Image (cartoon, rainbow, N blue to C red; front, side, top):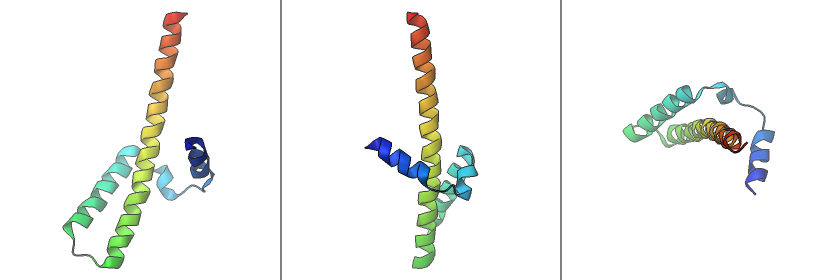
Length: 84
């Protein structure tokens, strides 16, 4: 099931956010959260900020998932080398 979700996500066309590095996306997400917490925006602006935040959170999650996969692969390789 998770594989299907990953395939569906990867089948989507790339967005400009996909080019963002983790730190840049995280900082932009923090700014969106700050703006939402501060308030003073219209409902339409708040919804646009929320949608932007969701996009940025997905970018951050993809980076974190990739980092986890790299760590898992490195640990598996190290474990295999120790056994071999």
